[in-house]
Image 1 (tube, one colour):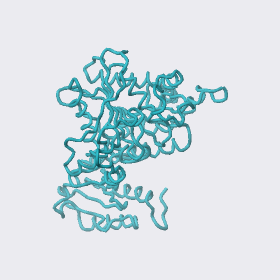
Image 2: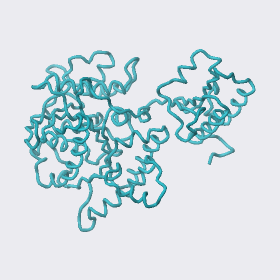
Image 3: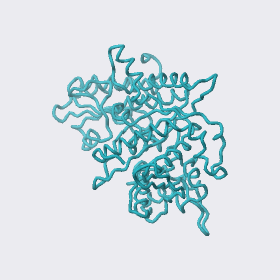
Image 4: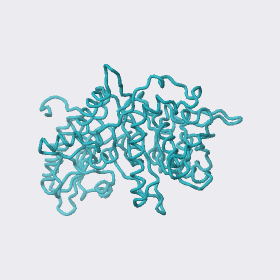
Length: 455
């Protein structure tokens, strides 16, 4: 409930603003609620067909003044009075009010933020021209330290063994992991940060951003597998030191015509193009694995909301994990993206214990129960209790986590000093179910994109 007295704060301002906007929309006007980067609200009213009376406008302004510091300097803008109102009313970034009526006169919402805007705009990647199909999976964890990069390396090799051309893109730019795990020190001259920096200036042509792994895939599938890596950072040149931190400090800037989100999406596509260009068979990757940075960050926002077909959400069963994912899911729900985003998501229970005192079965039962509670806000409402129970125990649902067992032998491992670590029996046992299940998800998607033909 919103307080009636005292200052209005950020969370309360949103509730008040939407309530006022819905009241105005109920008078028969098309309404756009706009929030600026400081959190202040204003209202754009489409009164081109029926002009708003000055008495109405003054009443709307008085209502908005209840927002206190969160009322903008120009709280109400009537389309009939300004030249550029249509550009706001028709903004492609505006979303429908998720909690309001869906009939004519409903409210739309345009949220302007400094960072994180892409969490609110979920898209499904379009097929490449000519019918080609590249599947993209992002591996993401709200918190670090959940074994995400190791899982990326294991999944990459497994898919290559099954005959797929696999590209791993290391998006953990602040803490690169997948690149060194798969390539050691044999990195290409440039990394993903180079493309992000150079693309801002239109200077990304000719960068060496991918390299082929020395790993020779086993022949367990129908094709001949390949494994390529696009690391976050490159290596020193002959006479030029690699200024990684200086580049990293500049990549997030939105430049005219080249915002960060667009440049990140272009960088992933450039990596795919490079594999096709420099490979032996002019073959595009079948599968791209994106090892994403942890946290609610712009890299993860672009990777999950805009770039991927499948998002593997890693977590441990603790309060921090569920609070973090709960905040993220609430953001998708509040912008009306719940239905679209949930189709991409699959939960991974990482570092699962399996011992006499902490058996795997009981841990997974608790994990999946907590995951269901978290995911419920993204699911459609189910009335009967029996159907609700069925939903919680649906093994095909996004919350039904696939496990990776905790393996102490991998803690603190230096991949450069442990050749063949992926083939050790205890490692294969720890990742067995994860590899089998995620491979099925990916190959099913590839088969669907190829008109029903499997790999």
